Image: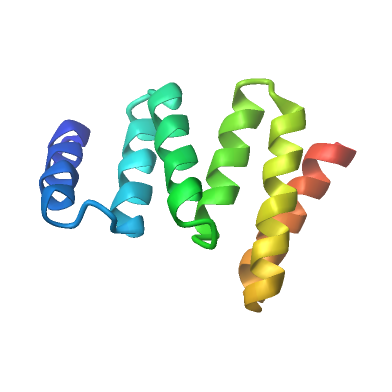
Length: 107
């Protein structure tokens, strides 16, 4: 299935479930796959605004900032994700964020 088809499918599902965080997350990932980082960034920011504890968002948004050369925003985003995952006891996600942040800061 082509990316545009997946995007259209997700948008259709969002009509029935406009506040579903997973659908918003999936849409942002599809936009990244399509090469539209600016659109993905907007979706991720909206997702964080509405669902701050949807922790998967932080990793991908920080990686997006890294690609754009916005290291300060990447660090800030990783750190917020670390705070969220620690608070929720999401050890695996915490470790992924910690590793990505360490790689950014020390490589």
